[in-house]
Image 1: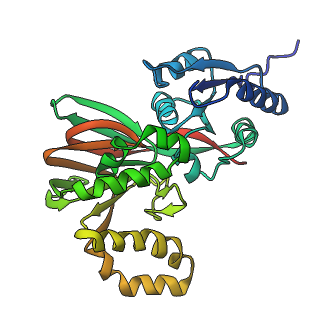
Image 2 (image 1 turned 180 degrees about the horizontal axis):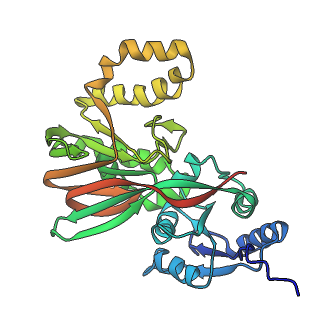
Length: 329
């Protein structure tokens, strides 16, 4: 009598999808083709709702035996699924269907082809990536914990997200954030914070924005924090202190010209080294496994483009290798 093969691992996929963001019929056809090609059993399906952005749907998928969960929706859906997958053995597959598609961009996943994305989910390989963990103290002094995958922000970026015109966003995609940013600038006032990296002495500073990144690529192929890595256990921090329009233009020059062009060549990197002083006073970059930020007055806060309202304090840390994500083999 032949002994059973105990080394075989049962594979089961599930899709957690946002019905507002995806065309369900097209998605079902794409998933069916990919699962068949890869030799997987029939996929389970779970829908998000106004009450559940995807966390509970993912918990239900895991309870049904899912070893792979495809997040089909925008950045909010991907973040919600990742929050529930944290620490599990199941992998995250991404079918980008939103405006920013932040994590998909940083993983260099296909944004324009659903079939290519589902094929990678079923036939790709696993990458153990870090998750950002944010402990948030609200203006009402309640504390909650949430996951972020790409970037957390206080200041103008959070105000920009809060002020984005939803109709314009549907029409022109991520460019609607630019419109919101232009409208927010005239009203922007620097605010006072104290921050501490890895438990060191608090530093008081006036800022227009502070961003904490798990990875650094933004829409428009903007290399905002090009040294940020998804799997190094470190968060990259940008403290923005521009003075007037000229200061914002200096930051824009840094993230587009220096990060996007000059860094690609040895000569360009030497130019950056010799001129770094010119932008360091308006944009300071720091690194650490965790950072604590306390605010003199509550400010708007965002995680991966999701609004979290006014906060009094946040503590952010990197949870190294906390989730498996599918990338091209």
